[in-house]
Length: 315
Ligand SMILES: Nc1ncnc2c1ncn2[C@@H]1O[C@H](COP(=O)(O)OP(=O)(O)OP(=O)(O)O)[C@@H](O)[C@H]1O
Image 1: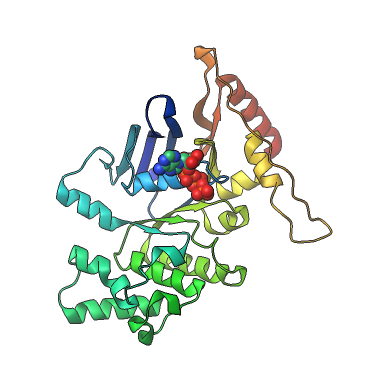
Image 2: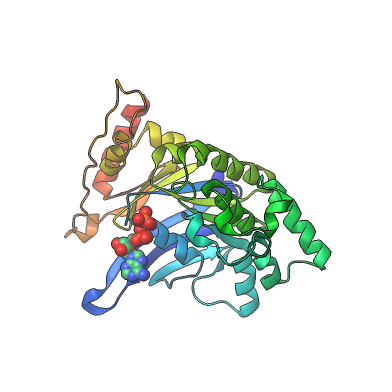
């Protein structure tokens, strides 16, 4: 079904490296995925796996070493004319992990939420700006009197609402949400997730949702990409991935989800997955489809075995 739609974002053979010469470190290796309008794709992996790096490359904050990032069919990682660049910068917004660190402490909430409108001239008059901000503040569940206050006067959850308002007032088409609830109290995480879902339903927003918590991913995302050591190892629709994880690393990740029932509580260790350097160029691993929509990083020989394994799991 997904493939009949035009992808909003396409990441193809993406490589991102830091440093040069002997210090060169490839943080993202040959990443491939599409993101469709109105869809949430989760990028899940342990700390340091390369999730944020992919998000930052999509936002144009860091350069890419190889591959393409295409938005609305237009490559955006190889330099854009100024007008097109501004247009993309408006349409792709970010929500950060730490709402305490990402808001300018010296600015009022009114200014923080308005800043994008001011920079991009997205208002007709001062009255229009005020109306847009008033609508947005209400939509994220804050009050008009909050506008004259400063970030330190708010709780973590309220700050994240401000961060969401700041991003969504730009009317983006894609939001890169980088661990948007992991810095928040457990009690308010669901509220923020529901708020993000509500906005998506209202406006066909797409989310690239960066997370390490699989229970959150299961709740919020349509599809999941599992990343490890800069490599996407498996990508599938959420229900499929949770029911039929194929890659050993994905399986260990799922097995490590803590179960709330203390009787059943378990916290298994993740199986370290080390990429094998394949000497055989004929059967080198690729990111390919096991069945339509379910991708895995494997050699052709492994792929055939995964197909059999999946058929058994499904029968
Ligand atoms: N500016 C940089 N210079 C050098 N190395 C970097 C830079 N940014 C990230 N890295 C490295 O790239 C790798 C991936 O980092 P990244 O922040 O994308 O991981 P992550 O999966 O988002 O982790 P976390 O959940 O901890 O944020 C890490 O090994 C990190 O040390």
